[in-house]
Image (cartoon, rainbow, N blue to C red):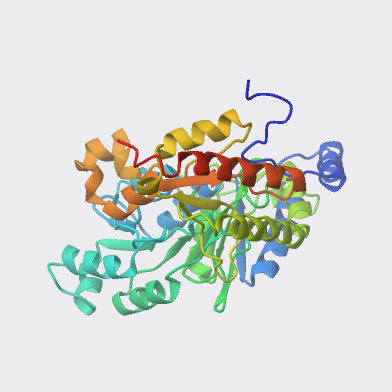
Length: 407
Ligand SMILES: Cc1ncc(COP(=O)(O)O)c(C=O)c1O
């Protein structure tokens, strides 16, 4: 019924002739995996965001794992993060034998609450702050997430990082190219990690990029992303560096990006500005259209927003249907949506391991119950944007005034 030809998918990459030709060039070159395309992609990305080091990897998950590993995260450590994220953010903490220290989001936002971070640091260190927190050192990193591409609370988080000596790793999976007065998201803390997964603002199918100013961390991540081998693999195969000799320094990972993916990424990077303008236009149209309905809470028009997601909140108090019903109605109208996020503490793994209840993170739980992610991508046509707006308003208006729905 809803899988008709007019169905508007939740996400769709914009792949043009340039991307096709770039990938074909690699396929015909005789060398498919990490080499000059990956190196060029890194150089171009580093220039774009203004970071001295950029490392291409095969996912943001891999990048987050490498970042925390490079900071020395291990068993017994804790990493402060928000439950309002995808499991990758906290999963990598567990891969290293450490535990996430979840801090709720600030009410009315989708972002970790800086005050909550400070409270958590004080609690974790027996009420001690400052130098004492540094001495104990069990909190290895603060890992904020730029949910949807909006950057929020970073000056406060950077201040806490300085005060307590705890590095920041930015989960910038949604946040390319989000900008703030202090620079691009991902360059505001110690290490930043972007995702080029198929639905993201630029894509390589699967892929990611890690940026840092920290030379030592960059060196460690460079080695660990490719088996813990201490030199760049392409040197082994180029004529100049042809050699069978290499040294394994650590039990590293297999996280390198292929040249096929990097070729695609380079063309997408060149189109990032064009993509952003289209996303901004769609966001502005949605915001204008939804402003007049009291049961809709559109996202803020934050400065430098990358608009990876359009996170619309539905005020269930004013409607006779639930958020889930709202999603079903949009699906019936041929519109794909998603929910970002089912907070981690509601998932069986985290819930069972740490004994969480839904109310333990009330702001995250409240946001989850209200939120719907609408389609927003450069390949969306004008008539499709209008159809999404009409369907949201039709669904909401017909459920308005019929009383509050019962959970
Ligand atoms: C907030 C967040 N962090 C990390 C990731 C992991 O990204 P990847 O799929 O590139 O590993 C995602 C994926 O969607 C995400 O939403």
